[in-house]
Image: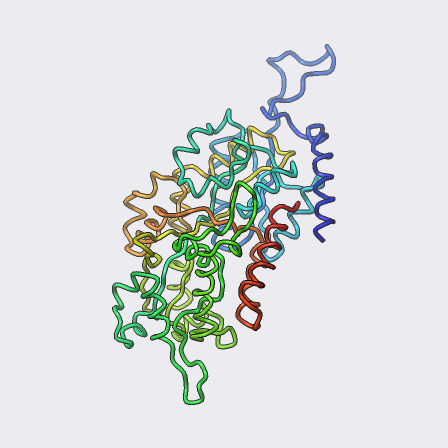
Length: 434
């Protein structure tokens, strides 16, 4: 499959040289008349609006909001029309990647942030037009962790959306029953691990009856803990994963995994972790701030609290992941950049944060009074202060990390051997074509 997609994207680069032949000029102006018999300028028809196609992975609330945003954008930009297509997330990548090698590719679309550099290298997307959105303003106006991964060879290829860090969630009832501080929560990683053990209960047969923590190797919590321990997960300069070669990373992963392997605070056969948290049989979770909006809807009777990640040596680094708005190599540059600029504007980003629970990427919104009214949302926004760019932000890397932890948890292979194997697989993957 990988070879097939690489071939398709190679074709994209060739097709890109012809893409301008069938598209409106970037300015949206009509072509010059071919003969002298054309009507005088005063009688010439106005230029047809430029039409952009836009794709995003779908959910009811997001789709409704984007429909409303497009109506507002078209009102502000009457010379630009946007054709929307919402695609189920499970089908999104499978439909998007092949389209980039053909004329069926959308003009503007969402991708996981880690895909931006791959698509830029393949020539499938183009940089934002600096005549529309100034690069120096991007560097100063946005949280660094949200835009650094979108910059390739000093050019920005997209703007962030759906920004997420990770927070600590705990069931206040279960924590109080264990004699722990249900209001304050675990303050250090050592304390967090001790809480996970204390909150784990077995039945008379020795089977898991209550999980202390539903951790199973999710990339953002793993990278956050490795970073907190001073480990080196990935080297951007050499484009090499190094978690298997760095002693601090190895020990951090060993300690993280020991809760599952040795202390048995959770197992995947017991219950799905977030489902168990909703049901009140998983006491703690680490997850995205979007759960602040999800949990009251899906588990209205659940009394939960939220806090920043536990500290290690006084620091609380939080792994940031996001999606990005990008434009294909065939898109009219000015109009597509205007649309992306609109979607990442302060007003739109604030509305997106209020309605979806995703975090803002603009610095000015980190102190916005409306966004800080809710105590839990305020904690989520504060988590951006020590955020760093997560490297596991493509579907294939997510799959490999999941497979790695499945092997760590469910086999007797030495940890070092497993880490070495997957370090190489992940390095090969991140350097491979899309």
